[in-house]
Amino acid sequence: MRSLIKHHAGPELQLTDRPKPKPGPREVLIRVKKVGICGTDRHIWEWDAWAAGRIPVGIITGHEFVGIIEEVGSAVTNYKPGLRVSAEGHITAWKDFNSRTGNAHIASDTKIIGIDRDGCFAEYVCVPEENVWPVHASIPDKVAAVLDPLGNAVHTVMAANVSAKSVLVTGTGIIGLMSITVAKAAGASRIFATDIDPRRRALAKKLGAVEAFDPRDNAWINQVRKDCRGEGVDVLLEMSGAEPALAQGFEALRNGGTAALLGLFKGPIKFDINKLVIFKGCTVLGINGRKMFETWYQMEELLLSGRLELEDIITHEVPLEDFKKGHGLMISGEGIKVVMSVG
Ligand code: ZN
Picture 1 (tube, rainbow, N blue to C red):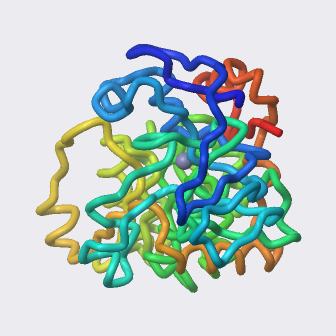
Picture 2 (picture 1 turned 180 degrees about the vertical axis):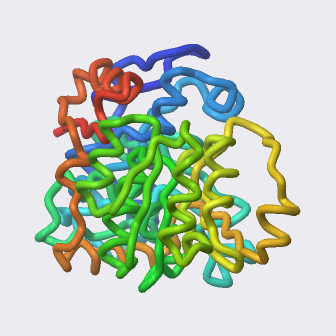
């Protein structure tokens, strides 16, 4: 099968031929239709310090996909070939404390497809049946291919409880933009955004932000505080992983507000925790992955409500063979979400 692999301990990927995998007794084999290129895939492509320390050479990359079940293992009873599915890419043995208490998304034994085991940038991928998510018939392939990052946005917004609250989104990358449309659909009263890229600021406003600021001029913080009873926003959704944005976001957050942090920082950072967390008395939530499977049900409800605007976020579609172009569009910033067609 055609497979995109990390062929050496260095940049780029290679399209190569690999044997079609056999599903284990409790796994399903999925024929991949479309895949999403993630920011994580960009790190793997560029082979930064994180990728070099985590990604095994030879692995098939990719973790966002939609496809059709081709074959099921001997012990699989829930699913049959022919079903259109996506999957939760975080795989756990369902044995540790968190898996057994409703928090499998932070299980200590998590293995991620396309990172710790073969992923979906290939004609076929195998996943455990517990991870399968049947896709509703009214959700198009292009959207079904990106349920993984959309789930990150849904998880963050739902964890922060945004209904009838003012919300600030710092960083409007893919998940930041998704979180604007999700927060709007979930009943946020007003949404503010920050990003250094004017095109993304414009898109943030199109998706429902009342104002989108260039964070390089600090004046926006006072404007937002003034607009929000002179105290600041109720909720901060930190999506940038940029050190200055984190401090700015907490400056703009009201005392007693809630901050949900999803953006990943390059490494340890400097942050005035006394002033910005303790004396503010705010709640800080670390967000990882998607809740299994509460987030997936919430995401399906939001998609079926017709209130999510994803058309402008999925900017490009290319065939798998054009993977260099696809990853290039992500790296240059020209593409926001790039989807590749596999079969
Ligand atoms: Zn992803």
